[in-house]
Amino acid sequence: MKSYLKTFLISGIVIMVLIGTAMFVLVKPFAAQATSNVHQQTAKSTPISSPYADGQKATPTHIAIAQPTKVVQSTKTTIKAVQPTPTPAPVTPTVSWNDAPKTEYTTSATNVRSTPYTNGAIVATLEANATVTVYGTINGETVSTSPTWYRVSDQNSAPQYIYSGLLTTDKPAPAPSVNVGGAMPIVPQPQGTQLM
Image (cartoon, rainbow, N blue to C red; front, side, top):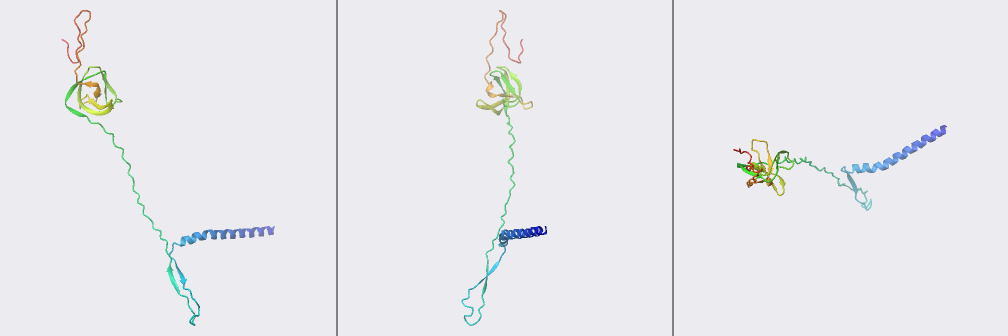
């Protein structure tokens, strides 16, 4: 049993020596490379043709030659903080107010909306030929080929809009009279007038 133990220990020592040698061989080039950046001087001798050419013992002349040194220069990298592009605020269309309100008429049944867009809330619906007071114009959603909408509420009221293509300045023709059973004809009166 003792011979096995001796063999085992000797084998372990041999393996450790082999590993150490391998590490020396592998690490030495890296160590040499790491120290190559250090400024080193090497001496070169001038050749001597004969040590005793003039009867005296020749001494070699040493000349110190500087080896080029690798210089690693660090480069400064400027890092600029990039500011994100701000999201532009939504453009709120502005009303171009008329000098004086003008009267227009609906060409068909018309929705009055809270915004100058077809997805704006409907606040009222007017019949065809209804009289509308226009206080200003505003660019909104393009319908057909025009983005123009009319503001039909004054500056002190909640905004109400009608698309410009649904209004006209032409006063509608009066409705024909209706004769009911030989009685006097009934003529529809425009809103806001009183019958006498």
